[in-house]
Length: 238
Image 1 (tube, rainbow, N blue to C red):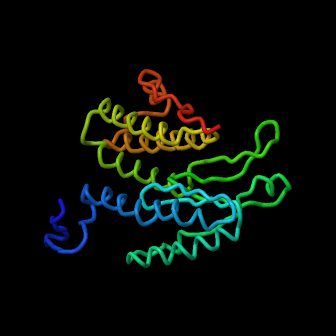
Image 2 (cartoon, rainbow, N blue to C red):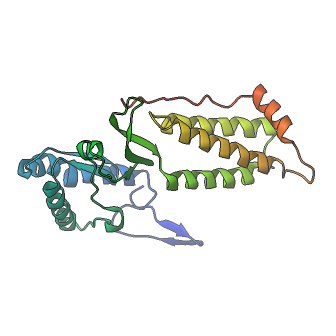
């Protein structure tokens, strides 16, 4: 796993440096390395030099740093770049930004920024009683990517398996999506995804032959017999 090469266009390329991308060892080693380079440094050094409260939330190579004071945020960004360079790593400037995300300022009517993390967009909203509350929704880019994947999958399997098997696989995929994205305030986006995914599958099922397999009415009857996974909140944030 450490010494395996990369096979591309029939040519095997070997390297004596690093771990091959795609190896099961790669994310494990990367996470161990990031724990030392970023996590421990943040807890032991960064927090001691900040005037306000700061917290790091990291998953793999993606992370969010929350700062009580804007001056701390600017100093951490500069220090993080230097820290990574020390270990021959580089901060992705295109995906790194500082945004204002203040409950107090939002309550005062000042526009606040949004940020993306792990496929979700974080933004400020209000409860039914009008109180400010941080909310999440499926990131638009992630939803478009997943719908594209559904389209490619449905096109590739429409003639490979029997209908009932395709439908079983489809329901499993939807169940995974619902369980991951089914969080507080995001049910509307999950419902939109499921609805569009069903329409995509319906389109490709009707291209299994020169004659249509279904009209929409018959497809609805089929879904009532073999229902879709229930859309619900699996993770309560508040």
